[in-house]
View 1 (tube, rainbow, N blue to C red):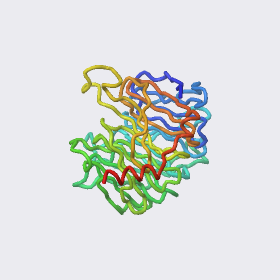
View 2: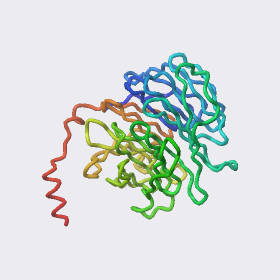
View 3: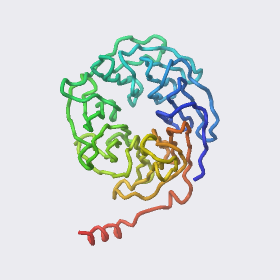
View 4: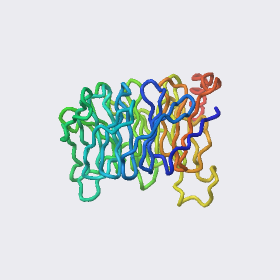
Length: 346
């Protein structure tokens, strides 16, 4: 599994994202330009320039017609993918930490951070695809941080755009009605399985059918949660704070990424900082392998929609695009043997 190393960003990566077909990879970092790459060979198709500072998040609509970025410059920008032109900019009351298109691309959510006197909000905008430069300035829905609640740090959409699922600074995950913003369910997903004091939810990514999702957290854990029942299905425990987590199609695996922050590491050695991508069996929760390569924490991981590979972006400023080899697809866990071993432990 020899990766392609992409060196187009000057600072730490914040998010990488494939389009629906998987032929393009979108990336943003703590510099002020987004990049679009061919995922097959790592060639850079172009850059999206216009932000005045760190870009925290990027997403692309299902047709690869428009993509959206959110940054620390209090701006949400809408771009035409084919030309790289910025067609619209929304002003945000505070830095934008996450943007995400609904599954049909008709809406865009954006998280405004709880800083600069702003309460912290999830705003939803209706997207005009016919005339991308003519968007409504005002959001169609605003979900505010409850008075006693913790701010949202990440969010995404369930199937058909029915629910908005958000992860929060206090380790909780919430489910909102996407039409009226009503709070439907809440769950403590982190701060339960370890004694870590920092339990911020750092990532949410959905399964292919969006019926369940995975979270990552600074508490060194990742959880798999059912959208409808809002029950925790699985817990994956790591040995370092986790910044990102993704679910692989085709095989029953999940990928976790993170690592100790640089200021907490006494040497830059990979093993010391635990900067590997970690593979876990989705059903049995066992760690089955690690992939090295980054020289700093992994900040973001995205899996190719076809399940043929994945990409990771690190604090080191590099993107590594991996294509799974034959052994990955041939790997399997003997369920009967695994069950016998579990019985022996009991």
